[in-house]
Length: 217
Image 1 (tube, rainbow, N blue to C red):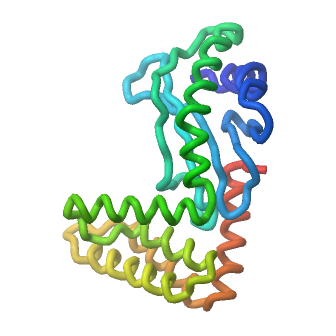
Image 2 (image 1 turned 45 degrees about the horizontal axis):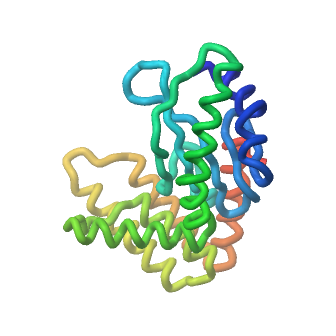
């Protein structure tokens, strides 16, 4: 994708169409304030190497370090052609505006804050249980632990941290353990060791660092 052309098209066509509350940062659309969470929309190239793309909306839990991981997102309907000129983007951006308003904003409204992210995580857990998937997921456990720390529910945070430990034990029992899973367990362990107030302060620092890594204002 020609990122420069996309960014110019966002400024020229999409931001004015979406209205107040949106801004563009390095080709990523950001909605609303950035705090513990951030709401974004951005292009996603399809798997096949064609000049097409899709659009994904994401809710980031910024307390989780790093700019590459997220667990709450929705890829919106439609595959959009990548125009070869700025003017060619005008009808494409009109279609993107429609799908963002129809699908993206309701998703962000539902899951875009701390309580919404918690609801999303619990919904996924319920779906996994229905499918018989009972092994703990270390990414999910980390997110749950941090959400509960932020919310001030220390007992729930400890329960989620215990799930992270369980996921770590499961990982280490495999013939080829995944190093980054152990790193997440260590990260959760270090946060919990700080106690309720210290943990929340550490997560606030994480959130500021992750927001900076994502270039979020």
